[in-house]
Amino acid sequence: MEAFVAGPFFFEEFGPSGPVTYTVNRTRYESLLRNQLIPVLQERGCVDSRTFMQDGAPPYIATPVKQLLNLHFGNDRYISRHFPTDGPPRSPDFNPCDYWLWGYLKGVVHGGNYLS
Image (cartoon, rainbow, N blue to C red):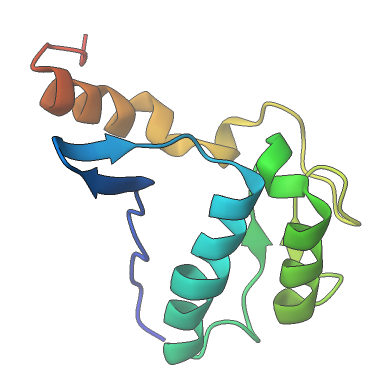
């Protein structure tokens, strides 16, 4: 199976004055999983053979999200807080983008140099 990147996914909509960015809540996160991420993984045949890993932010551990992940990944193929397989808290493995990508994106969005 070939390697690929699914995303990035942004939580924004276009309003009268341009794009409006939203914070992640349970409803938006569940919608992203159901309508964007899981279909991409299904197209690639990855859902039945991969483990899903996320951090333990409150929107990610909401009951509807847990039910959706359990439906698609089974009870033993996802790692997150309050799931049967609990990941280590504050693990750098959960957020490797924090070390480079987020600084770069902030620089692009805000026009500053956030890489240093």
